[in-house]
Image 1: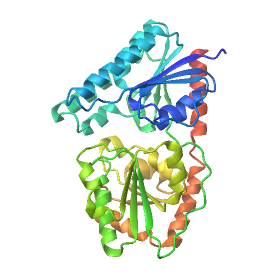
Image 2: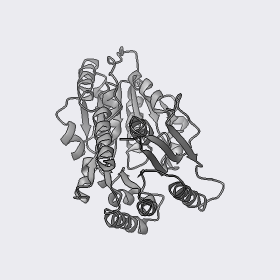
Image 3: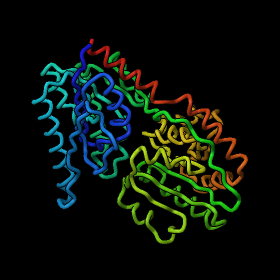
Image 4: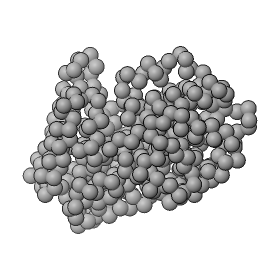
Amino acid sequence: MERPKILIASSVHVWNDIRVYYKETLSLAEIGDIRLVAVNNDIGPAVVPENVHIHRMPRVNSRIPFVGAPFTRLRRIGKILVEVLKKDYEVFHFHDPELIPVSWVAKLLGKKVIYDMHEDYLVSFRGKKWLPAPVRGLLGWIVRLLELMSLPVFDRVILAERCYQYAFSSKRCSLVQNYPLRQDPPEPALRSDNDPLRLIYIGALSTVRGITDMVAAVAQVWSESENVTLDIFGQMGEKELEHLIHSPDYSDWLHYHGWVPVNELSRRLPEFHVGINPVRNYPNYRHSLLTKLFDYAAAGLPVITTDLPGIMGEFGEAGFLASYSSGDVAGLAAAIRAFFDEERRVVMAHKARDVSHQYSWDSQAQVLLEIYREILA
């Protein structure tokens, strides 16, 4: 098979999104020549393969209130459409439902079309606080109808999680799960009684992801012992949380780093003692396996998590989780205190290392490559 020309596009995700670039683009570069069109974030990798070409589209122009975001998104969609029209690609692989109409054009031009579905949008739109409440549910249904109507257009729908499968019974759907990039977990970072217990949270910051619960619980434990810290790595999903995260009352123990590249995050994760997943019991997360769980385990970290059915069903017996009820700040604080027991923490860290060997992107990369071989045969 000749090396296919592949257009990977996202009007929403930054170009170096872990799934979009580090997992899928670099894996597909083994078999094809890639053009990646996605959003700029002023951060570049040390090396880009010769057969991967990246076009970075502008971020939202914040100087145009209310109009800036939708106008910029429409411009991005237009640029991706132009890219589809002017280039001779065999495959159009896109990551956002707003690009479904562009996929119709790609199919009319004879290209193979792959829709990479990151979320169950029917459910997730209900939690988009930046949308007016009355339209959230309506938009979710519009997206679902677009997805179902467009199934004949898609040569394959790739699902990032098993819990989306209920919506698509088509044989054209394949599961390519968001397992972490392979790494050998280091030995657990040891701490003495005088060292603070170092907690870490990675991921977007929003209320439904439990950020306020987490900060309140750590503040409670700090007030008792002054022997705990919390480091947060991720984008600010809600502007209202900025005041909380940057409060001078928390400056002694809360450290916010913003978004960092995946290689830096992988390097820093093993410095910490416990990972936290405080996500609330919200429909979009109820049966989801959030990527941070795999990332914590890959770094050999035990995890404090809410006891949502998807998480507990997959990892409940694995021995590296300490769970509490969603939204229960006192329960989260108690789970944190329990990790002052260093012997218990190290035992659970070794369990996390065992789990990490079972979940690796390598296996999913092979699934992705096989999908391409099938549709290009």
